[in-house]
Amino acid sequence: MFFAIFLFSLSFFPLIWWFLIPYFSYYFFDKSPVNGGVTKRYSLYFRSLPIWTWFCQYYPITIHKTVDLKPTFELVDNRESKEKSKDSYYINLKLSNFFNLQLFKKADANHLSKKEQHFVANGPRYIFGYHPHGCVSMGVFGGIATEGANWSILFPGIPISTLTLTAQFKLPYYRDYLMALGVSSVKKQNIQEVLKRNMSICIVIGGARESLLSRPHSKKLVLKNRKGFIKMALSVGNISVVPVYGFGENELYNVLEPKTNSFFRKFQDWLKGNFGFTLPLFHARGVFNYDWGVLPFRHSIDIVVGKPIEIPKIDNPTTADVDYYHQLYIDELTSVYDNNKERFGYTGTLEFAG
Image (cartoon, rainbow, N blue to C red):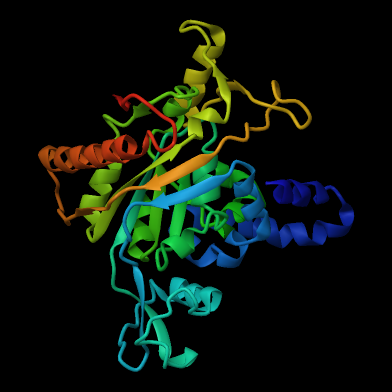
């Protein structure tokens, strides 16, 4: 974000205006954030910069997996593989170059030279649902949108795109920063293309409405009527949905709740209805004080990744189909919370809103 602001500020200096013409030509015509182009734009090197490790250490952010997830991409012998899929080409190239095959060492592959090794998309794609939204979803950013918490070491062979509002990609430079992290639009067309190209996605299911419910120790989730991700999984096929719960996400800020009919509450609802986001009233700590400011509190965020729920391909899913798999998702999310709440100092049960 700061890098994007820095680049934007440089735009006011005439000496670099020669750069602006080609950049803004590209900016106006490039549709990568909404057409699956993030699979070509994300950079595993950028996701792995030391700054993201420092970011995660501030809280700290830690990922806990309950089961091993089957990799989407597996290491095979080039001499036997016949796959020529263009959809997987860019991801395959990035995996090969970045990991240098270190994370995929297997006894039956150690004898192969680098030229004889190749990643092939043999496994499922995943839709990870992150809960709760919190005030600004710090956990999903640090833990999943970057390698600061070692996502690719814990879940090798599962490249992932974190989804956000399309409006965020209207900002010059900032959009490129987001795509370098693998972040892309939550629009339906983009999701379909990203999954088609064998990249998994992470969605903060509760969205803007859930951000208004963010309170320390709150267990309210907006999920009861959020079924679009299940419909998407059914229509695409070869998808597993995975519930993820971030213990500590709601403890990063103190969020003030305006009265129901107050001007600011109406303004929040207007923003949410017209632009898809809203502005919670929040405060936390400052740089040198601990009782007021906009810096998040240093509270641990423990991200627990649940068990995958395999979703079959159904071209025209019925309401009953969607409801069935949606309930399986809710049950697994509830299990993730109940099985780990005492470990991280929580009590009570999850509450599901519409």
